[in-house]
Length: 398
Ligand code: NAP
Image (tube, rainbow, N blue to C red; front, side, top):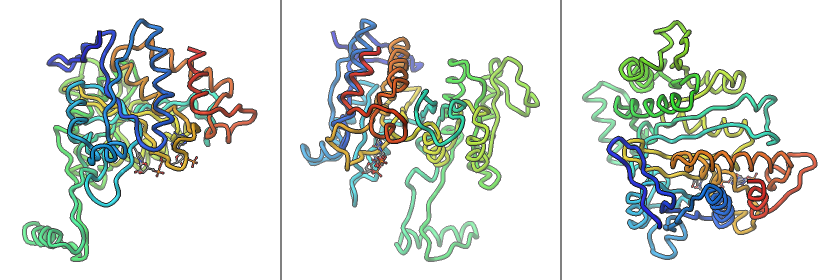
């Protein structure tokens, strides 16, 4: 019988063998990639005696056409009630209303950790020589930073007021023709994100957590993020993890918590990727880093993501690419991003064996050079297949 997923007070999930999971198909290529990903997820679940009771909810263009709202209250309420959901890409409405549906969902449900695993699959075309050395998991803070949308536009009374206040109260001289944005970074927000990254590293037996920041310049926001990370390690994880300064870089059998400046990090993830494992970082840094790393392992078509609140249990897994409107309805694009987001969802449900099966079957399919257009155009001797055929090929290899 279909059952709701529930969370205990400590965030531990109770998941039956037939959980109800809300999904948003997504706009544009959502009609192609969603059914493909669903086919594979259903087959993998069935192999392990499980079944997902899918519950469609609306957002984006489809919601707007049917209800006049880009993000109906019912959709938000359903995600609140059923805790875990998954979504395809959504059109960002241009000119008014919601800035971004994705950002709105993250903020309403307080999904504070954006988790992006980045690894290479054998055979995937990559612009670097050793993509196999890339195996990182980025934990990006999702609710704060310059990304929180606290901005005033140049020339408005609000901007003039803020500029005057900053001049009068702080003595800060800001050009009158400026737009101004605010960058809040809190101890609460930083520590809960770094806690999630460290717990992940402990559970998955990873070697290190790197705190990526721009604290050499932005001392009281980015620098504080770094300091709170080391403080948290001493306060809560001293039995399993140790900060670089507290061990001289030699953590013994513990997880090493280290830090790196964001600009250097963008160089070093290219030149020495094997020195990075779990990464915890602020919102904007995480945005840049996730896309740069996704490119190293074959790009946007297969990069998965999850937005998670580890305390309330709320999570939404999502394709990280956009709606690619020029390909919509052509049964052409790669369903890998939403499918691997489904793998992350399975792991969160505790369905590790089914998740591993999907990854193995996907690897086997790509290794046989059965791929969608995006990989086919970069591979020699590839067999280019449609989205739906790619999904069937994966199911055959489950
Ligand atoms: P996009 O939809 O991500 O597409 C950019 C390019 O990425 C495509 O032209 C295609 O490259 C490649 N691509 C995207 N999805 C792919 C897939 N499944 N398989 C293989 N290749 C794929 O970015 P956009 O055109 O800038 O944005 C379109 C809309 O999506 C906008 O409304 C934007 O706001 C929205 N958006 C939504 C999300 C989200 O919901 N998470 C994220 C980003 C953007 P080639 O042309 O080289 O084939």
